[in-house]
Length: 365
Length: 173
Image (cartoon, rainbow over all chains, first blue to last red):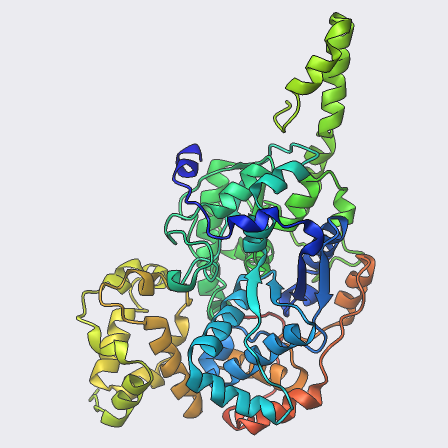
């Protein structure tokens, strides 16, 4: 990944890094899949943000974003109306930043934001419909995605300083589609065919992003494919899973709950498409805030990584056991430091302070 | 099969998205489309654009092919003529719905949003899981507010309420 890193562009919101954490405040938009299918993502995200002292304000009364593939396909007026209504909830919360944890919700809300801000005709039409409910979108809301918040608002420097446990896991990351495209309104200013922000975040917090073929391909759930034509959608997923298995990873890391569902539940569902003698897929899938929490040294239980009481039909579908065992065996960085310091103290008692300085700054294995 | 050109239909698509006119049928979209590769060309974005240019309404709305689009936007990024394919497919899909050709899975999800505000209904096991994870119960929106808002734009008239809404297990984006 070093090769990609060298091409890194200066990002436009660099100055945000200087902002103290306590000033960051977001309206948290959960959508449908997270609270309803993958609540562990909600748990991990709320936990990590709480520990960092960053305020997340709930968006009471929010509806489905509505889903870009399904509802935009059915009726664009509905899509714009409900989307704009959701934006006004962030506005009523007195926040300018709306945080979504989902690529799909981001795709919808960001585009609705864009249309409402840049197209006076649409703005007028939709606000007229909303006026019946005494709602008005004033245009003071920026739609943000978790990766964009981690990359720009937290910033790589600060992310690095949060790491308490260098996991050094081999991870396969999946960007997803709506966070990269359309490139005209993409937040990262990166080429959608050669993005680096996710890799940078994962490597900054101490893991290895392993390249694999078809890394940028859709998870298969997108648009309306999973909803309408599930077997077809699973054909993509199995292809991606095969490529991921080929390179060998500890887990898949995603930044979207719908991709999460497609990779996690999908591993069970693709069983019927396996070739003769092909092994079942059992690659754990985790969300970026779970990986961040683990790297910050928190326990998997704090991040929702526990087995459901009644596992039938409840996520996660691929068990975390192997991954958790590996993480458990990794010591916290300060323990590594202590062991190292102790070892050095025993050998050369006077070199204590020197040992501390050399182990400062992350790489301690 | 005889193909009938529907000029009104063609005009309608172009009025929503004029980028359709720029297409010179180079087939870059089909070459890059993951669905085209997987379905061995059965889903063919170039052909759908061609049919739109020709106003072949019957061909486009009778067959559900257009609904196979992943909206991954690869084609839009690479189109040398900057044709906004996913937007055009949305226009066609919206048109299908107006003609009562809405696939069942979409119909049931749309009804779910109309009735409850969310695409995926909450269930007891998931509420239990939320409590296990130390999360509060999810506060759903007042369904009456959403229903009146959506009825005011005539959304309910687009849906079919006659069939039982069975396929509620999965979500769709």
